[in-house]
Structures are given as C-alpha cells and as structure tokens.
Length: 38
Image (cartoon, rainbow, N blue to C red; front, side):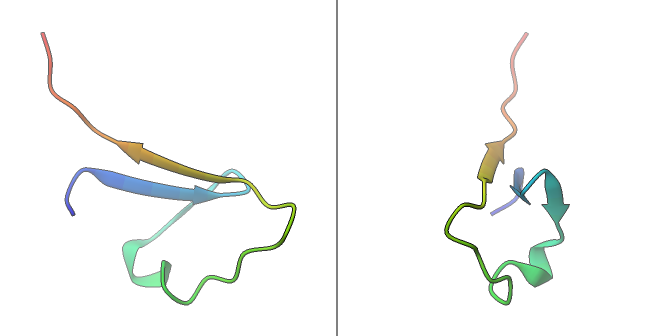
C-alpha cells in the first residue's frame, strides 16, 4: 500500500524487493507508515 516503507538492518528496501529479500534470524525489520496530521 502507498505510504509504507520497509527497512531491513537499517537499509530501506524498494517495494519491488520486499518479497525476494531473505531475513536473517538476528536481522532487524522496521515497517513505517506515513500519516497526515496538523
């Protein structure tokens, strides 16, 4: 979905690489979602 970013071990992944990216047991995954506000 739009407004979502994924980073693995501190490196942001392009959306096209999400499914093909292998995760390690001790890896760190961050999922960020943009929100509007004022």
